Amino acid sequence: MWNNGDSWHARHGDGQWLWRLIANQPRAGVANARVIIVNPYGDLQQFTRSHVSKVLIWGLQRNGIEWKLRNPAWWRFDADRFDAVLCWPYGFRQRPGFLRNCSEFERRARDSGLPVINSLAGCDFRHTWCLRLWKAGGIECASYQQVQRWKEIELDYPLILRTDRLHLGLNMHLARNPEEARWIFRRDTAPPLDLAIEFIDTKGQDGYYRKWRSHVIGNNVIPRQVQLSKTWKVDLEAAHCCAEAVEEDQRFIAGGEPQAGLVVLAARMLNADIIALDYARKPDGSYIFWEGNRNFELSVGGQMWSQFRSTTGRSNEECIESLRVIGDAIAGLIIERVQRHPSVLDMSSAHTRHSALTG
Image (cartoon, rainbow, N blue to C red):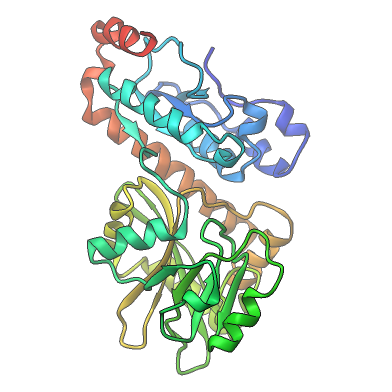
């Protein structure tokens, strides 16, 4: 049975209004594609703990894409009518073997002739993974060094100390000199600090630090927000609610990312079909990329939704529209990849695919 939502979520849990939008979304008259969503759970209730997963389902339903959830650890399944595989990493930390199982699942799917979208083969969610691939590909980013103690640091000061596998600005500290680094390392930090990153000063003449975020979905660059902060650590929580921030964000959304080709290239260097990239512009106008988020989140309801609205000046309807655009872009990417592989729509090849995947 194909999935098109779950009424349980219309009555319970976070993001209830989003589930009401999903429930009220008319189904498309024609199925444009049928996709397996490979994820750590295979269970709708757990799958939709992530707001991005809700946005995904909304986009699929809007665009006539039928879907099933699949945990790659489940070996056998009926693949006769699938057109594509979408890899979805949300919850991977709760399932330690997910990435390994996903890579094997991808191999079997490709052998069967199915296109794999948002491959996670070889994916690593640490900061050093992004920085290493960008350095190798000529994308400008900060230098880094993996360390265990402050005495091992060879980078010039000031620098950022953080935990390699943590995101959301957690365990992130600025050390201006060796004495500050020693003091920071002496804290009882858990998990421990293990990464030193070059500090690149991008503060503008007006005293603001800026960080741009764009979602890259296939070859589409979708501007999300430009954040302004008086401190070096720029995130949604620290972003200033001011007229300048609202005006710059409006220009960013209306005009799009002026260096879209470069942003797409940065995503390609990470082998990512669906990713959120954080970056800044140096005083000379050149770009510096901070990190790529394969499992980015979206603010849906609550304090962060209010903060997003206040720092961008967007109405509630405009914020909802920004979610719709992301869901539709992912659905469009799936349809595009399926259309590139017309053989997967030929039912005469169904038995071959079934044999390859159920082996």
